[in-house]
Amino acid sequence: MATSEQFAAGSASGEFDVVVVGCGPAGAVLAGELRLHGVRVVVVEKEIEPVSFVRVVGLHVRSLELMAMRGLLERLLERGRRRAAGGFFAAIDKPAPVGLDTAHGYLLGIPQPVVVQVLEEHAVGVGAEVRRGCAVVGFEQDDDGVSVELAGGERLRARYLVGCDGARSTVRKVLGVGFPGVASRNETLMGELEVGASAEEIAGRMAEVRETYKTFNIAGPYGGGIYRVVVPARGVSKEAPSLDDFKEQLKAIAGTDFGVHSPRWLSRFGDATRLAERYRVGRVLLAGDAAHIHPPTGGQGLNLGVQDAFNLGWKLAAEVQGWAPEGLLDTYEAERHPVAADVLDNTRAQMELLSPEPGPQAVRRLLTELMDFDEVNRYLIEKITAIDIRYDFGEGADLVGRRLRDLELKQGRLYDLLHQGRGLLLDRTGQLTVGAWSDRIDYLADPTAPLDTPGVLLRPDGHVAWIGDDQQDLDAHLARWFGRECQE
Image 1 (cartoon, rainbow, N blue to C red):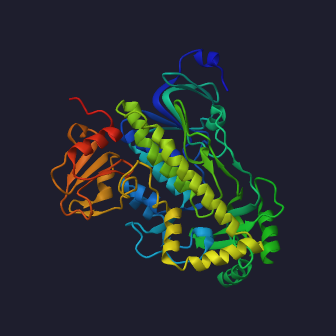
Image 2: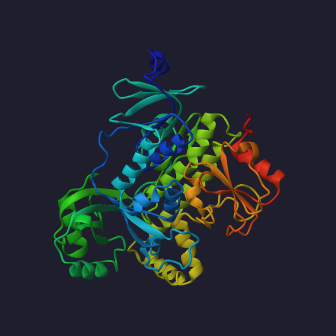
Image 3: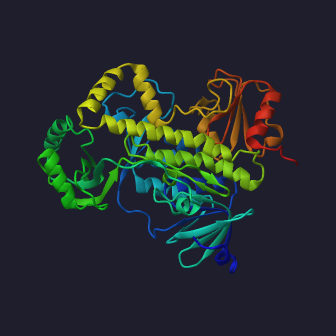
């Protein structure tokens, strides 16, 4: 880590409100959210070019809702493939529950580079600066801000620094935040390759092998005839596996290598789970994989990081702009740390259910039977898709702290009214007002809104901050979440 004396020597080459480290999905989302509120933000990314390999990821319901809130969903739908919102938990093949509480009840399979491209283009489009080929090597924070040193000696100065730089986060390591958890016990190879075997052969062998090895999977074809191949990695210890490693493991597990060739990308992952002890130290914060890692079971990783960024963005912007009520920025960790802990728990549970050992398989058979009950299946799918989250806002109705689904209103769809990242008061009475908070909160009177409550106050991330019809009570919650009244 650079010393205070080194940082003091000379002035910083750039002055910003926020430096975001890492231009993956979480970093790009955060930059876009900050810019919606006029925050001067620069994203520094150590890689010179965006990742080129076509890794297909899944955007779950809650992430799709957030994209709709910012007007980005249609751009993603054009380049992805929808599938039913079921069968995610430990790959137990059960149908999607009927009537999920969402207007976007599906999974969107989409190449990760496309997701990053759309999010980065949005961030740049609203005024964020992205600098590639810039690796952070150190930083120092003081009472007024953070001095950030880049490889090559360039320094940036900002009021805040956010590490969205992945599982091996430089920001987290320099900050000295602990990353406790459980070390990896089981390794798996994953890649996207072309396959020479016929679809019939693949389906037949896969059904047979998966009787024992639940993690084994060959899915596709995707664009260009590419298949995603997942196979247990017994004895493969090197971090970067080769095509030969895939062939050997496929032969050992399935008795054939399926004629795999021409890989687009190859990787190896374990089932380690780790969670940062803190998400914030002073003016430095963590988000995405820099704050938590877990197995990809259930496809929650990218989604968890994107949702971190949506939670943090408006709160950090409020702090920068000077209207944040006391403690607002601390609610980022208070709300998102427990969510990540729950994801770590459910991925650990899923990995146990994928084990070929007799005990876990007995539990898997029992859970498979239990998931025939709609309540059980719904509970697990809502957990994986993150639409079950209820932040703890204290005592109140069950809706408070939850996200509100995309409603059809007389003025159009609810999420279309949230594109600018502001709060929203939806008033069925026509008697409420946002008053002096109108610079931060939009107002909509709609007596026909399909709600069971007279009024709803939404935060910029779509979570319900208040319900009711009492103006005095509303004013107290406006102050709690949106700070001082605007003095004009």
